[in-house]
Length: 88
Image 1 (cartoon, rainbow, N blue to C red):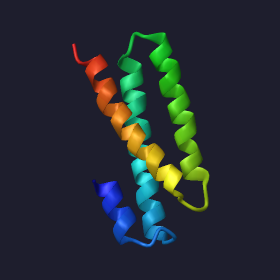
Image 2: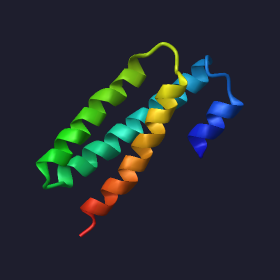
Image 3: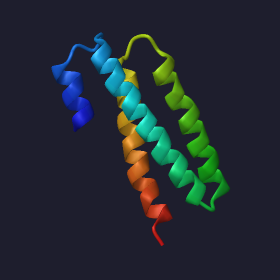
Image 4: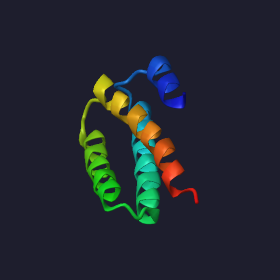
């Protein structure tokens, strides 16, 4: 919700918005890395590593596009789904 709120209410070209996106991508990366370390499934670990690599493209872009925000929302969903795999 916070991501969408910032997207709707802020200028997507502003440095503040880019800084917010940067913080969120770092949060996503930290969560995915943390979850990946607790998984036993090698295939899921590979997929998480690929997601981590793809999320880095958001950090390196000069202009945040709709596709980047869509990807971030999917990463949030992925994190929630992976939490179920790590809860024992």
